[in-house]
Amino acid sequence: MPSNQPIVLLREVGGDRYLPIWIGPGEATAIAFAQQGMAPARPLTHDLFKDVLEAVGQELTEVRITDLREGVFYAELVFASGVEVSARPSDAIALALRTGTPIFGSDTVLDDAGIAIPDEQEDEVEKFREFLDQISPEDFGSSNQ
Image (tube, rainbow, N blue to C red):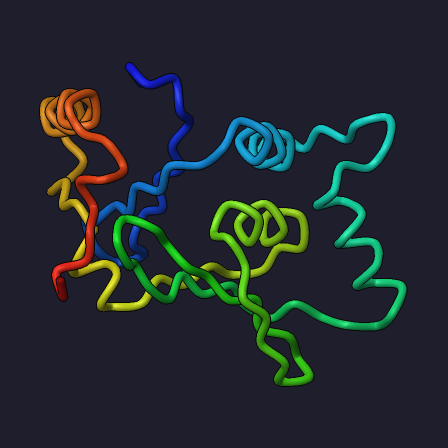
């Protein structure tokens, strides 16, 4: 990206929309490590959080991307006990990848910020990449303003 800021693309299951979320470099590294199955010599923060959850017997059952306000995404961690904890989407995604927890995006967020790429054809994907090169996180403000 021109701004050198990493982006996560969450793909809609059973649909053709993607949800682009800009994240920090530390979280990008944590997500990439989890995707590649890499284990650092010492636990990263998200690894530590996973280990703590296991030690206290708490199960993370889902991650929800719940809201988009003024260009900022919001997420919740949902535990088997029913407890819900607010989190940054990047941290929630990094933890979900480590625990095998499903990630859900609210319909409202997908409607506001989701970008459709029909049939994932190569020319469509290339258009999407060009689109991403021309936008910034501020372009994804809430439609409720």
